[in-house]
Picture (cartoon, rainbow, N blue to C red):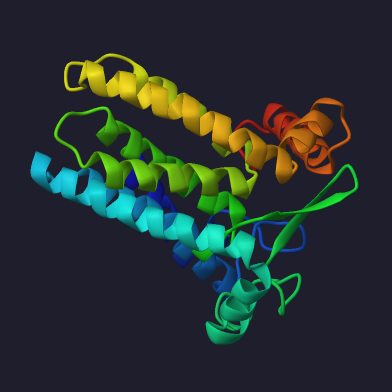
Length: 268
């Protein structure tokens, strides 16, 4: 199915008017937009499919996982720095790296503020920073950190692992994940932790007990952090219907469901 989707999109990219009618309100047929869609949406699928069929051995998979975890630790460290020194981070990203110039000049995306990449959430009258780290996007950063958290927790549940280095990195990833204030990703992290604590043949019982203790201590440490950044307030506001983003999500879900029911085969 994945390869078929790639083929369909490439065919659509070459001859879009064979599938949809061009014109106002129709699907995009411009080369710039289609190239961006190909790069952002299709290439990642191709990479996942290629990685799925590489036929890596256990040793190679373990190395790949630890490299990913090391990268995630670096991403988390940059995110924590972004939260503590947001002005310095913003200057580095905008003026030193020129990320916003790249977004406008190469990706042709609309940048809300070319001089500030920081994202704030206004909840109950409080302006809260949501970190995006090197992704410059809190959602992409959060879900990448979920994968890194899963790797860290899984290694901590096994015998003969570098407990202190992996444990410190996992804790740092957890802190950065909370600072993204992405509730879906935080809930996903809870599912990950529960799944890792389940008994399996390759997991050491003593290590799982130690991991459970570490999770409990980490939760106690992160609760004040979550309260300080207003995550609890935002969650409460969402439950009370006072959070703007939640209202937008619910509205989009309702519209998407309605569109699917009216046109289950799509619009082209």
